[in-house]
Amino acid sequence: MPPVSRGFRGRRQSTDTASRLPPGQYETRDFPVLSAGPTPRTSLATWDFTLRGANGQTARWTWDEFTALPRQTTTKDIHCVTKWSKFDTVWEGISVDTLLSEAAAKGVVPSPFVLATCDGGYTTNVPLADVTGGKAWVAFMYNGAPLPPEHGGPARLLVPHLYFWKSAKWMRELRLMESDEPGFWESLGYHNYGDPWREQRYAGDE
Amino acid sequence: MIDVVLETPRTRTLVLDVPGWPGHRAGQHVDVRLTAEDGYQAERSYSIASPPEDTRLSLTVEQLKDGEVSPYLSEVLHPGDTLELRGPIGGYFVWDIPTGGPLFLVGGGSGIVPLMAMLRHRSASLATGDARRRLPARLLYSSRRWDEVIYRDELTSLTEKDPTLQVTHTLTREQPDGWNGFRRRIDRAMLEQVAWPASAQPRVFVCGPTPLVESVASTLVDLGHQPALVKTERFGPTGGAV
View 1 (cartoon, rainbow over the protein chains, first blue to last red):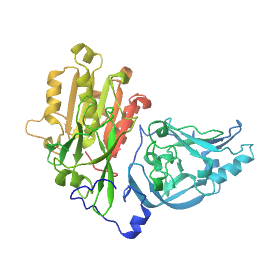
View 2: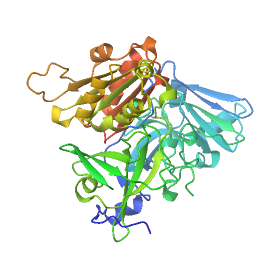
View 3: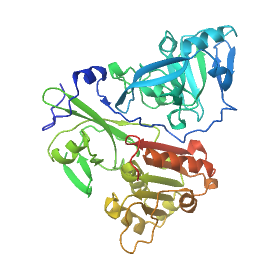
View 4: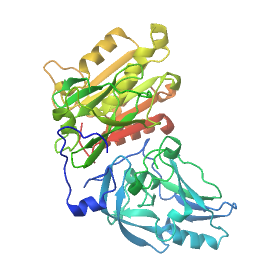
């Protein structure tokens, strides 16, 4: 038991809110913006998305091709490592399952890890098992409108069951890899996996 | 906590004696965790204001209306109380002497805090005028009004002692009588006037509310600064104009 903060009462949430908040998180109704550098601006005319196999095979989609793939809409709670959580966010995009099955036709085969790479140089790593089975999307709509650049538009990875830095903004490529490779924040002291329910914020957290 | 310094009506600095503090780099933050008697906990992050050279750790906290943790830190916590900290955290929005310069800092409101750690570090570790000339620094600092300028006197005295440090204020809401500085939000013309040119390849750190950070960072990129040299840190919810 950590030391009690003399005189601290805190703001209790309803049981319903509390049960949806991972440890150390608080609910926000806003949508805070976090990123390490300037927001990249990529025109849809030059935007493309690549799924790259560890075997060197690739599948690539232009914006029109990508957004013509079968879409899904999903409503999720999201949890940022900076402690805010936001409930019931509504996203539209392409499931990573769909991308993998489309890419299989181009000879792209699954590997146990993926690395998302983005405009601006950001990267993040996730096990393949965490982006398949209906757990992850490449999202380009938020709340029924195109995803704004400061929130990662044209398109971002959405892996809502992990801390939100894993949901890489401005994503352009998902690379399948035989071995794990830490991404940007994972190399700068943040946890390699980032499960909010186990409060895996920083390197060394269980 | 061993001391409190009132910085502005809404901001105070908590001076902490942290046994076993491993040291930090200017720009890093800590997580503060409060625990109520029944075990309920709340956590928030605060930027470190003190430079690595200080023996005490300082956090400057702005009291947020409707905040859960900042009102406690501002009004309830007293010298002698214990605070649970975790850190230092963050390895990207950091600057130290080997990172080099010139240094261009842009702050809005309490976004000054990690930038101040950088200026204090620069000042503490570069003892001679020669060393400072090789690593000149500029700060552009946006506040709503003069009495909300955090570290105002210290910034003034730093610039008086150090001609290689230039501090420019803009006051967006209200200006004192006789004010002849900027009186608007930071814009392209102001950045062209105050920032180092892109050709000087300054190390740029921008910290403040999201609209300020978004606008300053993209304008600097438009002015030719390499995105990789422009590091940003944002705070607050979606807004909060400064």
